[in-house]
Image (cartoon, rainbow, N blue to C red; front, top):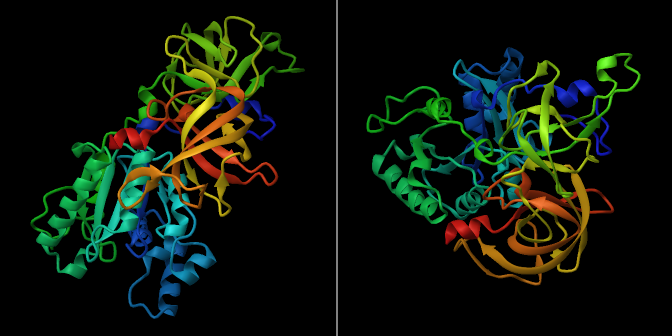
Length: 448
């Protein structure tokens, strides 16, 4: 649902339905080290599923000829920024949308260079699955471990280890088996269940096991990458969590000339987790008033039930003072309301973070001032353990940080509810995002 920071929006957007049901859509991200072939893999997926226009293919072919290549460089379908083409690396998160007869996809191709790890956090934050690439010649490297830790931190529920460039190791089964074994141990140490991780040997350059099954890997009897993406169950954690909906806008039509809208008062937003239906008891937070849902409206009419990611307008049985920034939540499973937060922060900015800093914290549709307390532990990307933190955090650091907010916030632990367990830290003078934060210690919990 679209809205400006001051809460202005239009009624059709505020109460409109999402274009497709979450069960028909898979959001996934790619990650991996530099030169592991992420952009080529994404380009291969788009090319082989006929998800690119003819003029795009022609442009890539011309650019490939100019570079002296005999075959099209499919990475150019993704690396669209001039700086990316010049440097040969992915800098920003590139989102691509494509579909097959079985499913629709939103794909986030994230950077591999260590200095852009923060962009991986952005791309993976809404993913239900991540494709983590490794070069078959190099196996598991430090950046693989760092990306795996980020994916575990964000509680991405499913992983695909795509062992790329298998053509460069002569399709050797033993090499690939050893890499898969190493990664299985890493994933297990990060808290991923064995059945959540699938290993697929691929060659993005020539297309082995990406969309079409390769005859050069007779020893592999698993799915192709696309086959797995089409068939993997999509039941995001937000669908199973208690109902949460941040209020984005209060709708009170004026001057419509319609008597049936004279007393209309609805609260528009996107269902962040769980489901809501008429008759459900809800609590309005942080105030704490309880009431009952009278109706769940959309532009296409009322709904019997609305689930996560559905943009709706909720009418309540009682007239309660509610404004943008409040949260509607299940009365029988409410979040806690607190101004003291124990958090895990991924620092995204060039300038360091120190205790005592005064920042803005954006949680749902509410923004409030916050003071940074103690920085207690920092994640070591090599050992994947939290140890004593330095006096300040540098870019890409992941650490446990205490925060004190000016206003009490309705929060859940990120491990329980993503939407109300996550937040952003913002620089007050510039409005730039400085950090992505999670309530609680989800990675430390997973590591035991």
